[in-house]
Amino acid sequence: MKTIVMIDGGHLRVLSRQAGLVYDADLIEAVGRGCVDRAETLIRIHYYDCVPFNGLVRLPVSGLERDFAGSDRWLYELSERDYLLVRLGSLKFRGFKPRSLPILPTVNDDDFRPDFEQRGLDLRIGLDIGDILHQRQAERLIWVTGDPGLAPAFEQARRAGLQVVVASFPAQRLPSELLWNSDMNRQMDWPAL
Image 1 (cartoon, rainbow, N blue to C red):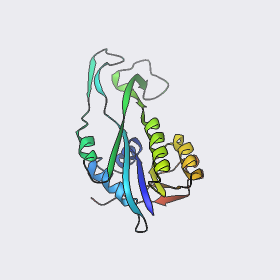
Image 2 (tube, helix red, strand yellow):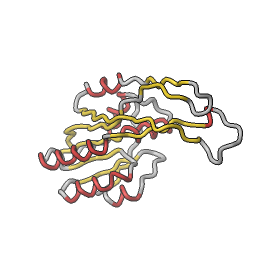
Image 3 (cartoon, one colour):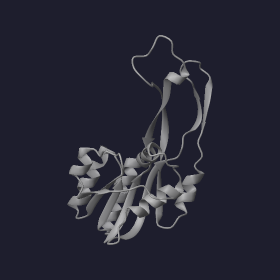
Image 4 (cartoon, rainbow, N blue to C red):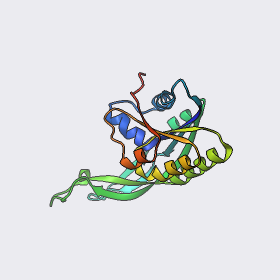
């Protein structure tokens, strides 16, 4: 069965860090390949993520500048691997949010966390699903995600005749919307690297 694996990078990053794993190109590729079983033929792994935010921002209490200087080198390394398609959005800095509420009378910069918004990924996912359907590139999509906002994409793919599998990892609880709009939940183990 022709199969495309679609990985939500932000989601996989959180899961892997919770599991104490190093998040890098090797892990991403191993997860993508590990999602495919013997009865399936891997066509491609689509990896969706954002380029790390780069820029100077003022901290909310002290007013000092903080330099966000994330490296995107690993994304280029990932894009050069066989059967991997990297689709990138951007991160927009939205300010700072308190780490806990209520806010105490005495606060410092550490009481706040940066707030970022992903831009452009939902559109890219929608366009990719449209292309997969139109060109009949696959019979099955395997998703690594926890984003309930993707449920309509699952539903559309199923209505068009694709099987939709959602992969889940140890200690992960999938939103009901994803389970309702998929054909099956494939329980995964972390790859041994």
